[in-house]
Length: 389
Ligand code: BEZ
Figure (cartoon, rainbow, N blue to C red):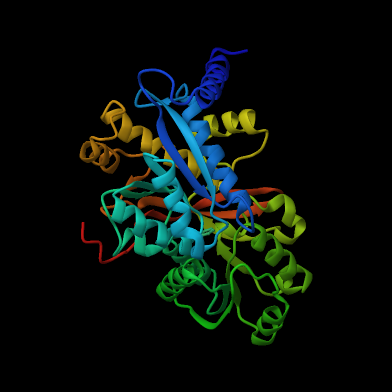
């Protein structure tokens, strides 16, 4: 066993011990509340986020800012109507110091309102809803992932530059899909194309057949689709089964093919997507992250795992600055705001409204990998307006 491996194995054991020994000792653990989808179409995304978070903590010997961690979990089911009750379980019942969540944009908007009203520290490890780092922004709300606009905008630029003039879009009808399509339209317009047809279906519906027939009748130069998790698997397979992938390129933000390629198989072959993470990055931190993740979870990490890992890094930066004293909120926030995050995706900084400013990669599906092809847009910030901070 190498020295590094021994350190990590010791760290895993330490964090397992801490989980069992919550509340013991003079220095009580930091209470972390995971509000994530553990069931439904986004279930795999929630688990990957939690894995990534736990991996970073394990790499730090089970402590952040000198304190152990105690975890609480709520399955939010990607259901906005249950979001207020669910976050209140973590804040009022479990008394957590920080909430880490969630995946679904509709759910996060309700969470952000409660977090703001109760001044609870919230780190968003996926949901890209623009409002939370726009009009709803607050000193206690951070995002370790992306805004829905960012990967969409990059894909629009790429699609236009590859000659797509008339494009059809298809998505679930909710904030993430709407904002992703808007980003795509902005990018496409800047490179000379336009969206000629916008198709939607309710979340998390996967009855795509009628819409695929409409795409075939429209004959666009390309299709842009926003789906993720189980829905993305089904859409990419249905698109190929209808034979559309032979004549009309299918583009998307990388959620369409991230964490899904084993299940999509040949249907995804050659697809181009844009995202803030990719396979094959020349980022030293990524190499360590991937081998530690594989060792701890016996699986290959995806973008969701990276975002969970970076949520833990951001919390770690804040806690280190206050030696674990979460009550020193202003200092904790100031440290997260100013410290670049050494992410497996490549280092990123935070915008004034606490959203990552980051490179968006162009990726191509090769086998079961989203291989990096290059940087589609460098240091892309969300254009978000209206943040009063
Ligand atoms: C969202 O709802 O914001 C979202 C969900 C899955 C992947 C990307 C974004």
